[in-house]
Length: 222
Length: 202
Image 1: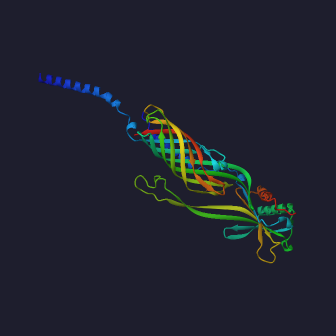
Image 2: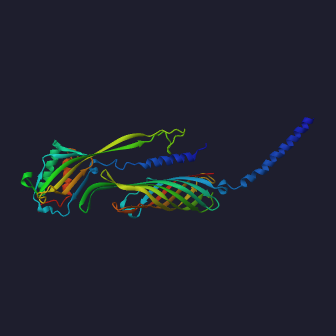
Image 3: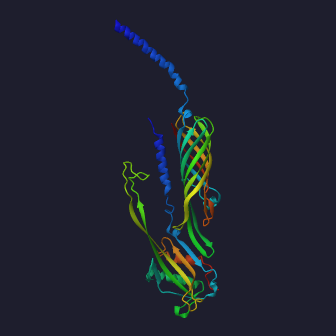
């Protein structure tokens, strides 16, 4: 008999225990998502079109699709800001048919293959429009950093040119679209103007600035 | 199924970067397109005032710090083509004992450069050290690159007088691939004359 009573008591209590859990559970869903509560992380991989501008545009006729970027950001929920580091890789190439290049007392007949590559490493800051969990979230971005840049102009197969570390400044805008509500993965598209001073008297350029339009994916986590 | 997007994206990024890092800009360059013709001339020289030239009967071969002469079939072909072009421009070929105005030399130059390059061991991680704390030292390999090219020069003997010093008033370098091909030598010699329109007798 004692055993039956104690079992009944146990049952009553356990029932109460379950009941409490059921009552408590909705509270979980009232909490903000971690993206709204904490500083979270985002990595994005993009690639796309590179368009030479300014004096570089006159020198390099071709646009490029060898234009990639990887960015890692800290995303701050309260201020709509994010800060991060981005590394890129850009490569331009332009073949010019045989021409006679005449200077003071020299004539050179050659096919030129003009190449320019840059690996910019940039600290970026972004301001976003909309909540951190919004499906569509436009942003503007500025960046400062340096790039290893190399210009090689092949006369036939004789290389001439210059390389070195150069200052880089970027300004851009774009949009990120989450594939799922509250999701981790999304689409990113944006355009950036990249200012890169690169003076070469021999090649007649003052800078190697470019306009970059890229699309890709981003992933966020906490 | 749990897909690790982060790994996929990092993988894609590394693949994209490594692909973009070392594109070979010249892989589709034909031998003809690789040829470069460089001519220099002395600005104060009036080439119309000269009328005769002499040409050595052999090609000088300069190999780094050594030199000699060569008389292969190809060398004769080049020499006669140079003579043909000079004659076309109105200059008469005479013997070098007959006091020519110009002396013309044809040289084959071969420059060899030796360098050393370190091959870093792929077992090390990208940052230089292996995961297990081991470090594999790099191996070294030597590379040698040789460039051979034609060099043609015209020397002013008319104004040299009795001194040993004669001025080079015109020179041409012919560089690139295929310039020693039997069938190409005529056209590469012609090319340096074609671009030197000032080189003619009045």
